[in-house]
Length: 179
Image (cartoon, rainbow, N blue to C red):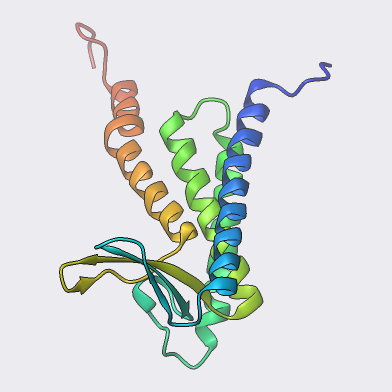
């Protein structure tokens, strides 16, 4: 038996490391915002972006933020289940999966864990990036949210243009052969 892990195990460790790095950056940036920006304060960065300090007890776009408190544990359980499913999925496809699929899953995993830490510890997620388009403000978000969004986009791209095409090609009969 070799003292070095096989290629699949190394790939898995690399993508879990990407997820862990996202969690670390997410938690570090949230800590900095809590330390240096007052709650609901704003620090303009340019004409279309502010740093702010928001507490979001809900999900994306503050969905369920005004609920009576049950949503905290619902989102904790949901994020925990999704994180375990993604970690197992990454393990199962570690040897043959396309790079874009592995990257997408790792980013979603890191984002889910980053927000799970906040929700478990604090009961809310710290959001701090605010983007403006004219007079319209996009809902505040954080590094974990950005990871989830980019990861989800990569998963869609993979499904439409990479893995979906590989599956289709594998199921097509060879030219000139009888079906």
